[in-house]
Image (cartoon, rainbow, N blue to C red; front, side, top):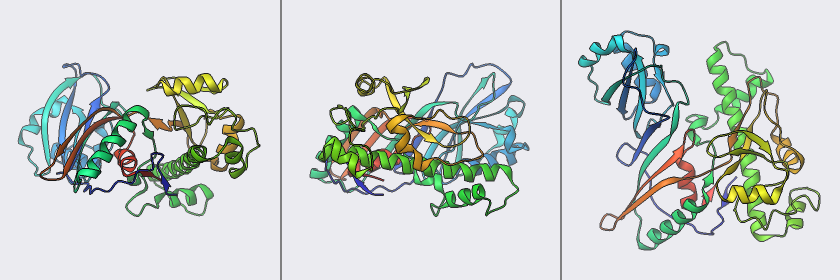
Length: 355
């Protein structure tokens, strides 16, 4: 579902997701110790998925891919800098390693194997092209809005495969109309369906936010099929993303879950970036939303044989830096996002739209 973003600004630019114009760099959760039986490699790659990069290195070292540690999967089309770990006993073999698309930038010892999610966040560097004077001013304005407000935390299109439809196989696995033996592939595809449901829920909440930009609380409630007073206290909230009674919230950027009880107070805390709403990845062992939030979430609840989770629906964009190269009409942008978040969300807002 395509939605115009709140500032009513449509912006045009060219972005090519290539190693020349798109860089992603991992930010470790904490500093490595410099000692221990594990060796952490800072690796730069291009035109390879993380899996392909791990296969190249594991084949060179003569080890299994599963014996290597990594914190996250990185985009094939970007120049990416990430950390992986191996046992330090293989350090000598690295001296003969050479690959045109992979470069080991540094190594350091550490006490533990790197685990998935062992990240503070990622730093993105992006070059936008064909940005003329008026577009440059619009980008400046949108960046200021993003810095103050943040962006919705959709799963990016790359989560759903080349054709964007791997979630359909996940649904078939859940419905029992598709059989598959490989457990990891099954879980990955069902996880894609969880992500699809999360994106649909977030789009519905974005629709609510946009309705409240134009209509009264009662009119928005009528459009969404809610009781007349269900959205009382939403329109006056200062943040674009409107909280409703019963929403599940999380302390930001990490912390415990709780439900909204005092709508005015939690909306104030959300506006000051102390907390943020958390959408549902449906499955087992998840904290339910309540009240109005529960009604809005119900269409996206499904029994999925995976552990469910809560994911931030709205995230902050930090360490924003920009540079305009007028003679080339390039707009160079750098920013940091929390782990698991996609740079495409920032680009969608800069264009004046989101899905």
